[in-house]
Amino acid sequence: MRSPAYEAILEKAEWSHHNRRSVFHIGEADVQRARLYAYGYRSQTIGSFHGCIEAIDRLSAESDNPHPDLGHAREALEELQRLGTIPVPSDFRALTFTLYTYDRLVVRALAALEKAANGGNLHGLDVLAGNFRSNLAGILGGNGIHSARDDVIPPDGSFLVPNLGIQIVPLIYGDRHSWNSAFLPGHCIGSTMHRHHEGVEIHLGYSPMYGDTMLGGSVTRLSEGYAMPIPVMADHGFDNLSADPHWVPFIFGSLTLGGWGVFFDVEPRPTKSEDLSPAPLDSKAMNYSRFIERDIAHAATQNGCFRNVLIPAAATASGKVGALELGINRIDQSGLDLTSESYRIFSVCAGTVDIEIGPERASLGPREHFGAPAGMTTRLTARGETPAVVLDAVIVPSPEGQS
Image 1 (tube, rainbow, N blue to C red):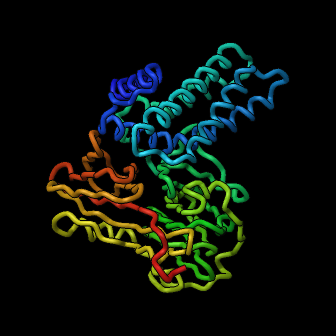
Image 2 (image 1 turned 60 degrees about the vertical axis):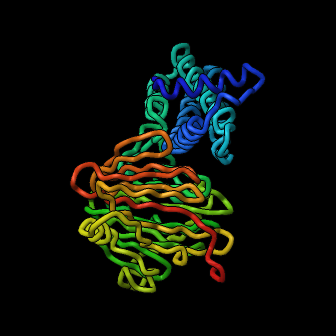
């Protein structure tokens, strides 16, 4: 289940803890790998930790005498959730504490689940244990560059937004912002309108689609992709008017709550779209939202490698909460290097892109997401002659004078 790269770096952590916590054998490349793996545990696994706890509670409620190891598994999963709220260090502690603790808790949770499945009488425990192992396989078996798709629901790997009942799939979580995906069934109408008190967002949608995107007192009917910036306390939602399911990838950020606010900072605001005023997507009423698929197509026709800002920080600037910035990157075979002072989340929109972050490499295609820790350079290179287009998002302090 574990890759040689994962085994090797954990062996360095074990050696440290058995040798008076000496760290002189841990080099910069080890720290970079540890940071990548640690953030990997803050990707779709966040949904797995949550979904597994809910499944344990559901299965335990069905038995008069649940296996005691279910409680041990639950305790480890709760510790994993709490660990995710602690910033990942940029030195040796990323390995000797953060990654090492993640690994020990995952081993403990999985062992308890499998012991309960083998020794208990609850139907479905073996499936739950298998799903948990499967959801972790990409991290344990990889090199640290972990990706997640925005159009797939991992088994026992999602959660329902409190008070809305909308199914959310976590994708990539940084220190202060996250990229997620909301699943809307066909004809999902009148149930998604809400607002956040201390969180800013950017909602995205891709074809095929047919629905109403709502912001404040305005609404736009859409049949093509969009990107909509949302400040704090702004009512927003999407009515899926199609009979087909629709995915709404979204970026959530908060300098006060971290990337976790989407779990609890949700105030339902039931609204009928017919009660709102129709407005063009790129109007002031819709906060100058973008036709994202047009932007992606336009970038692909340009020359060279570049990064342009699609949605500036000013569009979501909300005082101490901060602001999200959405960039678009055109990548060819010459390659583009990006480094930032904070965690950066990427979303591949077109083409295939080769990625280098620190000492590791990977290749990803459309609708795959990944993250890069602060201070580490990400090199993006198109594979083949077809250019790649990649979105990226960072959270920054609100521009001075804006709130």
